Amino acid sequence: MPNDTILETEELTKEFAGFIAVRSVNLRVARGSIHALIGPNGAGKTTCFNLLTKFLAPTRGRIMFDGRDITALKPADVASLGIGRSFQISAVFPHLTVLENVRIALQRRRGNSFDFWRSKRTLRALDDRADAIIADVGLTPYVGALAVELPYGRKRALEIATTLALEPEILLLDEPTAGMGREDIVRISALIKAVAADRTVLMVEHNLSVVADLCDRITVLTRGQVLAEGDYKTVSADPAVREAYLGTGHA
Image (cartoon, rainbow, N blue to C red; front, side, top):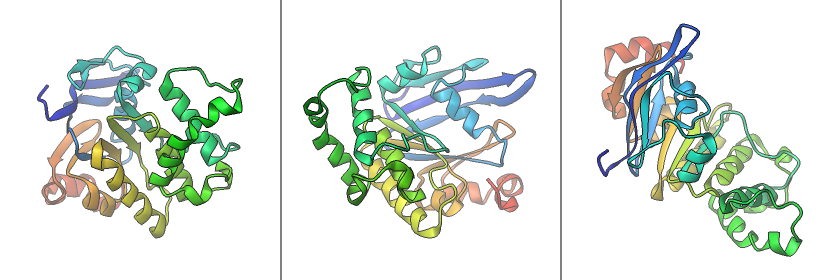
């Protein structure tokens, strides 16, 4: 794997009872880039994410991360190597505060079990780092708020914060702006750009204006296969992409 490539797949394929959801996908994500996977519904984008983060095992093919073959590893193993993922559906603890959610994520990074039984003094030792992460994602005014009480866009920011607490080298974001209004989209887009300053981001995203604004490289999937790849100007001008994706108005 070239030094400038952090994540790569070779002929990555996933079959479900004869249905091929992902077919021979060769993906190369450059270190320090923001890379998007786009395509129509059912194109295989989330399946690819599940394969990369080991929630699914590939039928065939290989996944390389930072020069290491991770194809056979378990989800916890790839997370510990530096692959962090946020999900399309928020995965925070709804009845814990913003601070408590980030602190739990920091405990995971330490490699220990969740230390609920430890003293408050021990847990508070993590607060400085938690506060810094919370400030990075713009949630300081909400530090004591329960996650369930947060506005939708702020809840997605909290999910990104808990992922950042794991100190990933590459951050996988599954539809980070889905269901958001304009103000939240602008806020989350700015957050993604900020966190990408010192890490790689791979994202599935439906909003083409977000993709155009943020992404260095785009891979277009359709029916589980790579249809096109390049910067936004290149893929948006491709007639096959227009027919399969851009012309439909859907992702």
